[in-house]
Amino acid sequence: MMETNTQAGGPKLAMKGWVKAVFVLSVTLNLLVAGVVVGGFLGTERHPPRPPAGDVTLGPLGDAFSREDRDAMRRAAERSGTDFGSMRTAFRADMDRLIAALSADPWDETAVRNELAGMRARTLRRMELGEQVMLERLETMTAEDRKAYAARLRDRTDRMDRRIGKPDGRPLPPPLPPED
Image (cartoon, rainbow, N blue to C red):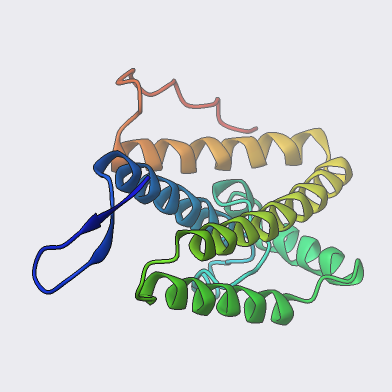
């Protein structure tokens, strides 16, 4: 998996090409998941979205809720014992440890893998909390409220497709009929 590279000044550990590619892909996917999860659950039109910092999130799923729904979900999460400040602190500590592991010389693949695994576990817990408060909120909505939420979700999904393109190249679906 690791090989010795003696170019330019002595022995140095280097990853084989395929291992490096797999590692870069793994880091990229983990950071992408963390960014999506952390990015937008509690953002509102009144306040700009928080930077990735440990809050519960469902990305566009959370963004499509009304401001009142997001506020209610945040309050429900806080009542359940969620401490968003501690989440942000833990996220920052995760990033500091990952940066230190990535900067270490010699390279310590095990330390990086351990940090990414810890980040993934905490990210999954935040996603589960977000899913729980979202489902609880959806249960309290009327059929009309859920249809309005679905329309906002479709709008956000369509905007994303226009911005980055549909993954399969198919045309956008027709818009939902307007509400009466």
